[in-house]
Length: 359
Image (cartoon, rainbow, N blue to C red; front, side, top):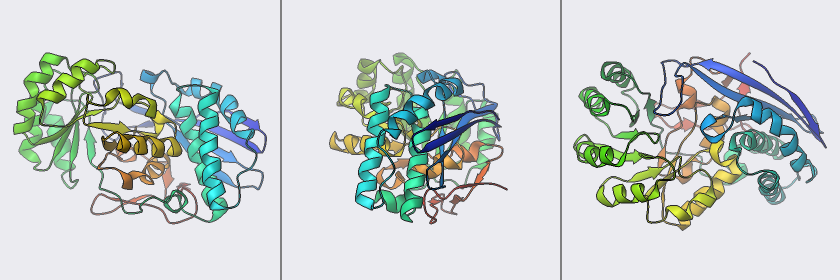
């Protein structure tokens, strides 16, 4: 664990890089060592002695590392400091949080994980200040759809065994994009009867997509996530036109500004706090997706309960939920978020984010 300290205006930020082993090896079709999740936790102190927790998961695919996040924290926190302290009433606090996200966006484009860490911490502080848990602060539903459970790339035998162990989840998300995709899915189907969601993480080519879709339909797959590289929109549109299954854009849908180009290309989009820059930007991306007629999948990275609790606060606004990041870790350094028997996250009721470090 390593980190830095940053001070700007009324704020003091401390960051820590955590490298947490996975419970099982977790590989995807693009760039993942499969052994350790690397995530950045921040603690943000305000002038009144409160501390907010935040998290950003840096993905090198988007050009982020713990080092880039640390380098940007002074710039981003400085932009927020220009707004002054958080207000004391709910309407003003919501407007202030939106302004803080806009200030970070104006300071630098991209770098969603760095913005996400600060944005979550600011929401935690605002909730504590007002005595409101995050769903009440945001005005979002407290009851959310159940999460699926994700299985990484591996041999058919190992993926099937992990599917058997995850049999209580109402849906499984299977990472594909390798040479044994059909063998893996057939092996999973032998031990699991529920819906399957497949995520190729840009790992297919158009011919593979056309060949696999009929087989996926027969196997009871309910959606296909990001089959082709992010900017291959013509190929995505062609596959969606030929597929009875919804195609969901992930790497092609990083922020809300990406959505207009996807109209008529895919049926759904994946919103992740770590991509878009936090809670507030996620809410606005979901709202814009609805305006454009997309179905919405709320995803995550391999985050701790800090990132998953923040994501859960907006999960009641989407159709599909994939918030299992903390369940993939060998150990979660935080407590306060509980998974119900129905695979729905029981969102904390204490003021703010409701997640605390384990003793």
